[in-house]
Image (cartoon, rainbow, N blue to C red; front, side):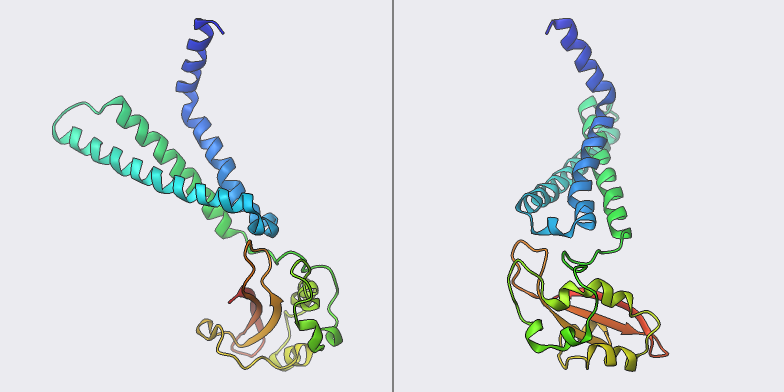
Length: 222
């Protein structure tokens, strides 16, 4: 590479640096924040967990950079000195990273949470759902029967009232779990899924409206 080529490439990076930073941040943020929305199994991936740690640390460092650049900007203005190119550059980079990551985070919050991996393997079968043995852990790598029919189950809930839901799923468990959420019905599904360390249990929470009909549901871990 000649000195002229190097100079031209350096000039290109200076002119398009913020665009490159924004694109790289968007790609990394999309993998960390949006990836699990498309493939919940990513939450159980070591690579994704490491990427999440780097993402959070990177955000923290850029917040510090932005704060330092703003302080430098204010001090230079108060002393009536010109704001240095380094301060302006740091502020632009930090604000670009934080803004891009913030947009990706907002999109991730807007996208509904997907059902855990393995929720679409079976159609709902009340006999299999009610069978006590099917509620226990069969294999750490395989969902229980309740978990495997979850997608078909929740698709049948809209329009049903409490008595119909209870007739379908059996009586709600008597447990203090998630009482603070003001849920109306709760059912045990099986062990936690899509986690690098699956040590918790998975539950189906159901809320009813003022008329006692299905309003919404959530799949949560304790």
